[in-house]
Length: 107
Picture 1 (cartoon, rainbow, N blue to C red):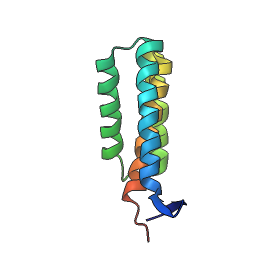
Picture 2: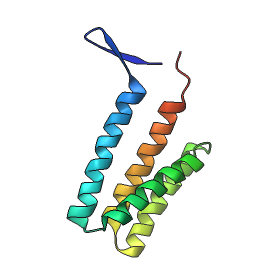
Picture 3: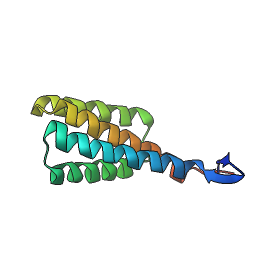
């Protein structure tokens, strides 16, 4: 597993990336609820659905993930919540990256 040396302690890169992803998720929750005005239950449901979608589509080619990303933004434009769906597309992209990092075989 890839490590980062911090004062002679090895910190695994995937878990550092996971910490950054979780902090970003909290920020997305706050922005979606306070700024955009989407109910917190809907935000949580969308975050879970984005993670599930990323897990189910984990083995497909990268360009298909790009189509899903674009499709989510188009759906947001169709339903009048473009900023919210851009944030959810970022959650999806982050989930795909985290799945790649956590399942990669480090040596």
